[in-house]
Image 1 (tube, rainbow, N blue to C red):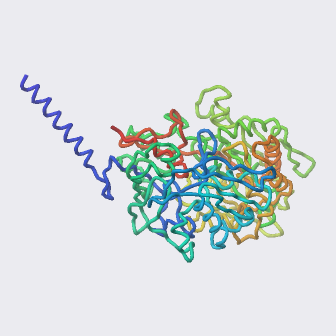
Image 2 (image 1 turned 120 degrees about the vertical axis):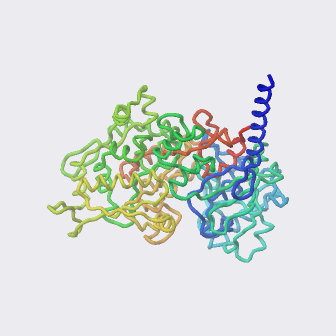
Length: 624
C-alpha cells in the first residue's frame, strides 16, 4: 500500500514538474511558449522595422497585412462572400453607380486609443490620390473624382464613371488589398508618406508590433490589450487566442522539417508532399488539410502553370504558338512530376478551378470546350480537350470513387498531348523546323524559361516539368531560376519569355476583379510597370467584355453571361496555360495549438498568408 502510494505521489510530482516545465517553456524571443503562436514566413525582409504599407519594399506578408492592417471589406473564404471590416456594410450607390455612400463601422479604435472614423478613410484615399509615389495613385485618380467624409461615420465616393464594384475592387477578394486605411492623426503630419518607415505602427488590427529582428528574420506581434476595439474584436466579438504571434524565417528545407518535428513551429508555409510525409511519420501532431490523399487543399485560387510575356511580340503574341506549347506537353507526366498526381486540373486560362469555380464555370463550359476546335493551318483541325484525365490519374494512383468524386479531386479534364498537332501550330505561327531544330525569322529559336527559386514549389516544379517536356518535344529551351528580388519586377515589367507566374484567380461568382487587369487599355510597354497584367495579353473582344462588365452590377445576371463569354475567348486565345489550381500542403502542429482550419473543420481555408488570417486567430486555441 505504501509502495503504491509512493508511486502515485512520484507520478504526481513528475506530472506537476512536467506541467510547470511546459508552462515555463520560453520562446527564443522571451515569450511563454504556451502563449505564442509561431508561424513561418518564407523570406526575410530587406527593410526590418518598415511597416508602412505605402512605402516601397515593405514586405506585407510578414504578418503586416495579416494582423495589423485595416481593410474596407474583408473576405469569408469558406462562403466565398465579402463582409464589411472598416465599412459597416456595402456601398449604397445611385442609379448609374457614380455616387456611393459607405457607412463606417462604429467602435473601431486605433491602438493608441484614437477613434477610426470616416475622416481616416477619406484621408487615406485622398493621400493615395495625391501621392504619385504610391503605386495605387494613378488607378485611384482614374476611378475617383472625389472622396469626402460627409460626417464622422459616412464617406461619399464619387467615381469618374459608372463603377458598380466598389467593394470588390477596393476590398479583399483573395490575398488582400492594397488600399489599407491609415490613421489620419499620424500620417497627415508627414511631409512624405512614402519615406516614413512607421517602425512603431499604430494599427486597427488586433495585434501590434512588440519587437523585431534587426536582420529581418522575425517579427513578434502582441495582442492589443484593448483587442475588443480592434477590427476583429468589433466585427466578431471574439478575442484572438494567442497573446503573441511570432513570424519567423526558418531556413532551408531540412531546418524547416526539424523545427516542425521538434514542435518549434506551429504553422509552416507550404511544403512538398515528400517533406510532409517525413514530418507526419516523425510526429503524429503534424497534419495537413486532409488526413489522407490528396492531403493538400486544391482550393487556393491561384493556379500554377506557364505564363507568356505576350507583349514581347512574335511568336509569343500568337495564339497558335501558345496552343502549340500546350499540346506539346504531356499533362499526366507533368502532374506526376509536380506533386505525385495530387491536385485538381485547372487548365482554363485566368480562372482557377477551385471547388466553387469548378461548379460555376468549369462544368458549365465542359460541353462547349469538348466541341471546341483548333485550326491547325493545313486544312485539319483538332479538338484539344481531354476529359479522361481524372479516370487515368485515379487508375494510376489506385484511387477509388464515383465519377463525381474523382472529378472533384482531379478536375474535369486537361489539354491533349498531341505533338503532331503542336508541330503544325508552330509552323502556322511562323516557325520553321529544320534538321538541327526550330527556327524563327531565319535564326535558331530558343525559349528562356524562368521560375522563382526556393519558394512556390508547385510553380517551380511545374515549370521544370514543362521544360523537360518541351525539350523532349524538340524545342531549344534555357532554364533558370530567379531570386524574389527580381522575380516580381520581371513579372510586372514583362521581362521574361515563358515563366512560372500565376496570373490567375477566382473565388466569387462575379469574376470582374480577377479579369479587369486584362483590359488592353492598361497595357504599357515592356520594361514599364502598369496597372494591368504583366503578361500584356491584348485581345479586343476580351477588353470589350471587361469594359462592359465594369458598368454592370455584379448582381446582374448578364454579368455571369458576359463572364462565360470572356472565358470562351480566353480559352481560344490561351494567354496562360494552367496546370493545377493552387495545391497547398500547409502543415500544422497541434502540440501547443489546435483547431486549425481543415477539411473536417473548414471555417476558413489554410491561408495564413492572406489578410483573413486575423480572423483565424480567434479560432486557433491553446492545447489545454
